[in-house]
Amino acid sequence: MHTCPLCHHEETQAYFEDKVRSYLQCPQCQLVFVVPEQRLSSEREKAFYDLHENDPADAGYRRFLSRVCDPMVERLAPQSNGLDFGCGPGPTLSLMLEEAGHQVALYDIFFHPDKDALNVTYDFMTATEVIEHLHDPHTVWQQWLNLVKPGGWIGLMTKMVKNVEAFAGWHYKSDLTHVVFFSRETFQFLAERDKLELEFIGNDVILLRKPQ
Image (tube, rainbow, N blue to C red; front, side):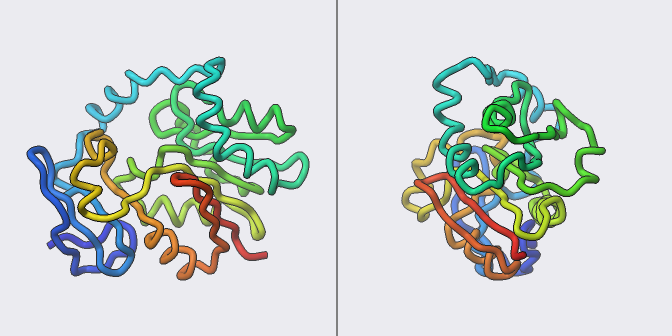
């Protein structure tokens, strides 16, 4: 059996299986994840992302991102300094936050691989539709915690697991680049373990704040 890639609990359990992949669940943090051998290679993964057409001028895309942008802006001090992690080929959330008066650096393993951006601490960081792609969520989660200053904010967007019945017909798992699936219980586990304030907004926005 496979170790949980998020909390490293050793005794994970079978959760679901379809014609393409098998999924396991961690009984400790409740993460659902694809069996590692069934993940895409980095080359095939990037080929999927190259098909994305994220246009900063697209009003619909901006509306989608406003679900995390607006609550972040409400909570940030003026002229805060942040990082958009996993910004993709057409960074847009960073532009929206800059329009609100903040400074935003970019990092993306494929499209903006500027590792210097990971050697700075920030007032906030965002990761929209990123966390479900992570092959090593434990390492990246720790990295995110280290990137944010005390009192700083982490703003995430991802669709969350509800139960196995809903998972069976869930379109989100059909994207082969999606390999880990968080639930509210997963974020509650992380918030309690890492002493973070946690707030859910709607069905897919998660805000976390580091203690001062």
